[in-house]
Amino acid sequence: MKSIAVFCGSREGNDPYVLEIATELGKTLANRHITLVYGGAKIGVMGKVAMGALNNRGRVIGVIPDFLMHREVVHSGLSELIVTKNMHERKLKMHELSDGIMTLPGGYGTLEELFEMITWAQLGLHKKPIGILNINGFYDDLIKMLEKMVNQGFLRQANFEMLLVADTINELVVKMETYRPSPKSKKITKEQI
Image 1 (cartoon, rainbow, N blue to C red):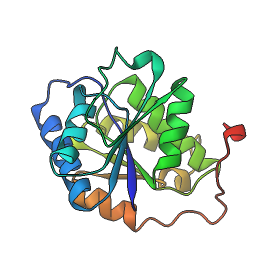
Image 2: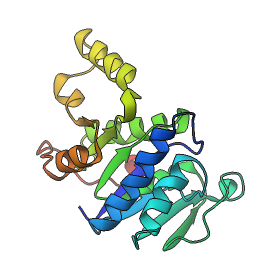
Image 3: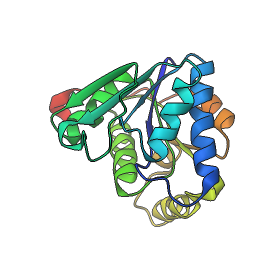
């Protein structure tokens, strides 16, 4: 993988370990020469991932919709900043620029981004690995909910297994690098979303 899109919170939350791991993720991506593609802010978990990469000479591409330029306090020291018209264009651009998607703790927006990407994969619109970095068990309850969906017949086991989950950065990166998608996946087009 040459680039990974990271979805995560624009707030810091109240677990300092999340921020520590977010910074470490940025450093890890930089050291592996993997470009970080993210939401473009200098605040929250997003800002920590970006700083971890930038402080280790990593390449960082921020993608932010115009209306969030001031609200999310755009990062001015990125390798590249792309401004989109809206949220949908932002997600599509992040998808286009990345070889995989990784999710860290966040709120509604983070979950929406994760589920849109996994839905596109489920529909066969892309073959990229999608992972959750489950820092301090943050996503344990979500994973239980997804298992309930499988058990009650709303989600196929094969589609559940498309979502890669790990507790550590290295474990998740290895899972993403060794991921083998279903052969029926195809390239996504703007018209399909």
